[in-house]
Length: 495
Length: 81
Image (cartoon, each protein chain N blue to C red):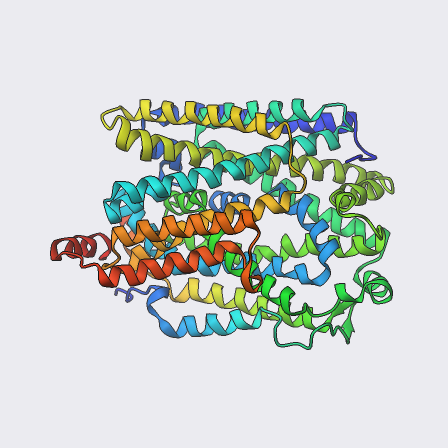
């Protein structure tokens, strides 16, 4: 990506962001020196996040730099069919309403730290917990990789290649590791807040600039009417099925993100959680909606781009806008700095959750249950660093487009949804049925993804989920749960 | 005075409305490929989808505010002490 405003101003902004993030980490550490003595303090910010910080940290888990850089090109290629990106972000909140109210209560009652903690509490089954942990770690690792690739491309673009891809990745990862290491969840949530504000501001300036200099939607519609009416039209059969699949896959998948569930546990109170969710229900219009419009404007502004070229659409628009006026120049520098910061903030949330699952669910539960909390945290951090190093090596050879990797992680993550959500309400749900369902769903979804089989145009992850659910429900009906087990489950889920 | 506890999942009526809204945010009920009339350059069907999405957000906000009441009061009492 070549940006007209790239160069020293980009480097300046990036350094500034880096310093602020480090500052946040150090101040948080100063104020909470005991943070490394307790898993609760380190991974959940002492379960005391207030409305604004909680809102922005949810915001950062759902919207990342990828939303800004990757969505407009998709809208550019698909046209109005990609409007689906607005309702699917709303649907995430609807899916939360299915389980978050009770999940918050369970988190408080049993001092749950991770989603795997909940699964262990509910099913008391080593195979189920370990399989769920592996699926989550895999999905989180994949997600983290996606962020690293994006950081590198963003930095190289913003500095006009002055800072090469690899240096950009390493610089921000080191900063992220330091502040995450120092302050845990609090650092992560506070930097999320700063990064969310920068991103929102930048995206709006991009929209305003695009409308002023390239004409708004009417202009784009004229162009599409003349050259590509299919981008304006109602999606055809396969397009509508794709729409439906995306809604369900993202709606459920993003709601059961392990780092999203952990944020439910971090809420200070039910009231705080409710307020944050209400705000989140409206954000899709201000974020996904805005970047969607930017992509549509791009159709008329830069016609006939190939798929690879269109991936650079936001950079092209921003460059053109930055050349028009000094205010837009700095707004675009801020936007790209904000994009990179947003990617870092998504990556840090994911990494923290990754470490917490290792600390608490694998090391703390099975390897060395007697370890002190301090030691558990240390092990989680070290494994986290090792995973980051491994992923950076993979990120050195970035895959082609971001969108394909994005769908892949949901295919597997979504397979833990029955255990988490159904387990909250149905006391007969049998651990063996849950395990079999999760395993078969995962194998089926992976096989279908790699073999590229999508019957009826529905994504493979959803087929996996369907089989998974059927096995869970039918299996549980046939397998008898002993009276004692049923009573125990009743006690766990009962309120 | 204590308000009754409310949990969205236990209220079937809410999920019927969510079901209807879900059906409305899928573009299956328009003729394929049509886009006229355009309003401010936006195809009519996209406006309807956006309208349905807005309704979904409104309804979610309503459910959160009035149909989700599990712990709040106890937490507030604790805070008051």
